[in-house]
Image 1: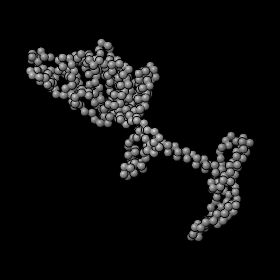
Image 2: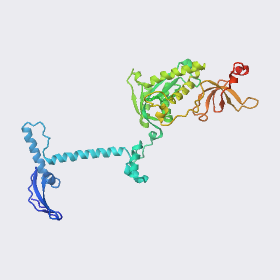
Image 3: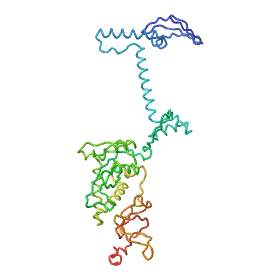
Image 4: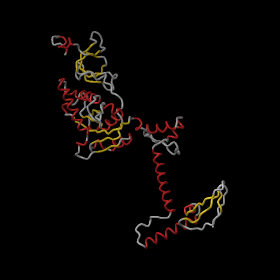
Length: 397
């Protein structure tokens, strides 16, 4: 027997027998204002605070299941008792809470903590969490039993929320470029953004991948052919470090690689430039580098682009075409600081914007000696200088 006594509201003592099922007793509650109402108690109310009652409920439930099995009931775990229903719900809720807690730790800092350390409002903190990333989450509650990892590549590079495809193209030995390139590694996004990297050997693919991630960014997904140079252990490790998922196509399914399509398009565009300007074939790498920049800055009639350029759709800002106003292999005069009596203005050919040489406006210029130099001070030939009747200019060319 159990008697509970309290004041405000007070419980009038009642004899409560220990029964494992259903309503087992009722109590009369007398409130301070004089109102009286009855409250029923069940086995769950007692089992949570009485070990003996819980034990009796478990024994009764086992007997109930044994009786169901003797009758041939297929499911004996369908508990009718309120105690076991509530226990199951509580266990499920606890499991969800633990899962949410683990997932929350993986997402990094919480909005409440951010609002505290940044001294901002909780509403601003919630919006900030949704609009930012935490790709390198280090626990600030660590025991410091060892040093944290040094890998921060996922933070160094710009994140590209798009799928990129890559493929390798080989040039014939007779047309090895003036810079010694024989291979091209092409990266292209699902919106048509192109990045080209020139290689002397096909095994230099890892250098192409590193240059792409540093100059353009680290994509969410990179799709490649099952070639050994693109699937070796070093490549997989690097993709894992920068947070890129490497997807490898099945053998002999090259048509699934979008880079194959753009290799054909850029090859045809370079052929036209070389044929139209009558430029030497060994200058194909300068023509391809220029053509890739033009393709990225062209607002094509494409549904995925929505009227934008591939550059803006991929990187989020507008491309600048200030250094793309010259035609390929166009005649020019560039300023050269040669000693007296050599002329200041020297005739040359423009090959396209210089990369990592000079300033952003510098152009590659083919000199009369066959060398390629970066120059930022150059001008077009006038109509008089281009006239067929101007024999002195014609002899220079």
